[in-house]
Length: 244
Image (cartoon, rainbow, N blue to C red; front, side, top):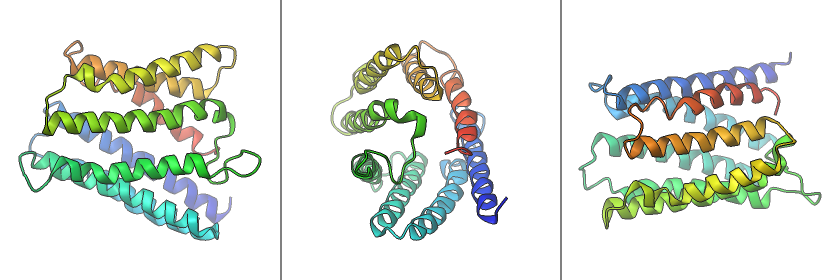
């Protein structure tokens, strides 16, 4: 195995381990077990993750000799990393007027805009992805990826309105996700004869959103239950990362 592949696989393993550690810390914190820990400490595994992502995104983009892809890689990774840092600061001091939710969400909106830009502009003349290899996921990718970005963006705007102007119920705020779930269920029904990882991951994401909504409205008693689909997605994504 070449040194390049060793570095690639090692970094992928480390990134997944960091995410799992953060997920454990996060669930323990909101379950009331790590209350003495600050949110900044809870999110610390993700900080390390984003430092590595910036490094690998930059090195990968430089090797591609595509300046547009290089700028996209750095901006998208940095914007998402800044959002994660601001979220942890906001959670640590929710009443601090200097940490306005609107400004916290700006890096996320930048990231989502850049993610949509990749979806729209990174295909070659044959309709294939140059910089995002979807392989067997291409059919479902066309529906799942852009719709999730749009609906998640709408949700963040509704959350901003709820936090700053007019209190909205979880049912109202989850309307974009309900539309997303309905759309993808229809897609899954049309692909029942084509089983694959894309159907599995899409179904698990929809299940996570439904269970999360039920938890938020008080129908499910423990936060760990909605995250069961995530526990399944993580190893699937980990395995797929070695093949795409």
